[in-house]
Length: 289
Image 1 (spheres, rainbow, N blue to C red):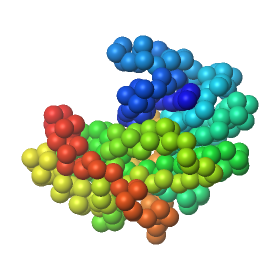
Image 2: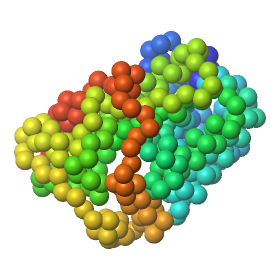
Image 3: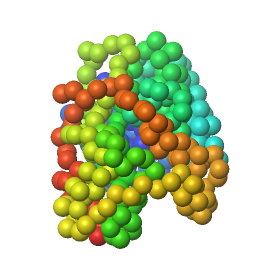
């Protein structure tokens, strides 16, 4: 096999890379700077410096690939959906020109709606672009990352878990490392064909109220879920220097999840992964507080 992994230093990509190495593969990893790859891994992977926004670089870096793990990284574009479109165009060109037979794409719960989900609309458009290529593709529709909580350390320190999503509505929460395990299994398998959707839901669905209860126990302090209004979120993001399209992409995700959204991919044994929020929070979040 010649397996190519994008974003190999991310929460998911780093796990994918380690598992492939442990399986005896020598994956090719695409990274902007080779210095970001763990020194212990460098001799076990093929490192290619490439920016995923550079179409020629992506094509060159994926030449000869038999499988590709594609994650759309933040582009910093003023309009995030335009950034997604550029990345998708580069992906499509690479798959076509290099005749890559299998692609595993890191998508999201909500992408099945196709429109009206803010930032997730960019992932939905990428799904559609891949579906039109006629290659074997698996869309990993992932739940809400535990690691999003790492951006809320100050708020949690003050006892608040804030969100613009409905705080009483359950949704799948998942450890990115578990997503990496599902992705690696898909990349190593050669038995699946056609278009596949593999949801990755974590061990159980949690509302933000329930998640706050879990965090209270894990962190040893009272955490309360608080629902922010869209305008409160807009004001905070504007103060942080985000552009209007960037702000609306984030607000749109929360609004889309609130407005009667029902996931297409139901929870099954195949979509359920093992790591609990309690275990993750005790290991990764508690030391920060």
